[in-house]
Image 1: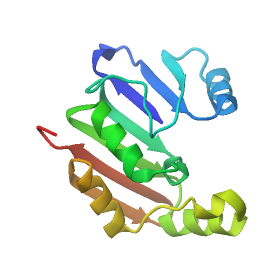
Image 2: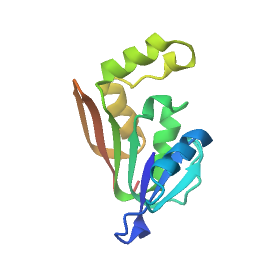
Image 3: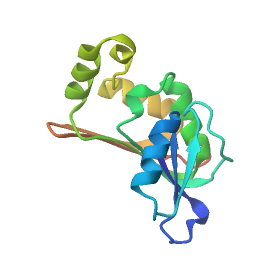
Image 4: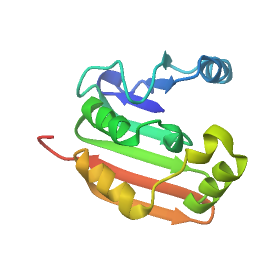
Length: 149
């Protein structure tokens, strides 16, 4: 996940978060010159203060959250009022789900919820203006944290 802090000051800074130390190590090597802070943590227990970020981008990671409702609630907690959550994949929901279930093992449970389930999950965590686009070559969710939530 990538977070854009409120106090980023237009410097292009951000926070990259992953549960895997190895994935963070690879990201840091790939983006060594970027103004990025790397944090190892689970999406369900984010080590950030409430309202710390303007945007949270979950690229190719949402299916892997162990407890999606808790993760989405934690993301909402760390967003500013009217902060934006982006969930994105470079393939459709169907392709991602088929790929994960066909791999089997631990990944077989790592699926993207249906549009109705995703909408409900986001609403329950305090998001509104939810837009879900599921196309052949991408999956995209945009959601805004409701005011006073």
